Image (cartoon, rainbow, N blue to C red):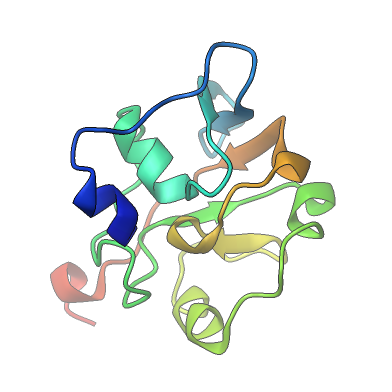
Length: 132
């Protein structure tokens, strides 16, 4: 979790409607779950949790699991910095891995991602719960 958020617990300012970075969350079948607006610097996992979107995040963003695995359209994926080695290691364990998969906790939003579709995979693998 973002340290600045922890220090401002409950004091997150959301963008005025129409001024934030818009994300369209979809399920694995392409059905729209919710469209939300976020601030630059927010991560996808935190935004999903804030808006009650079912993206697990079992390790709370410490890059120790793959339960916040999301799939991005190629055009938006290509706008992001390369995943770290730690993120790639966790993605290797993700269910339904694609060429444009990322961990939601590691994707920091920037203006170039405005309008992006964030697709949730059909399932997740939680190594602590699944016993693998």
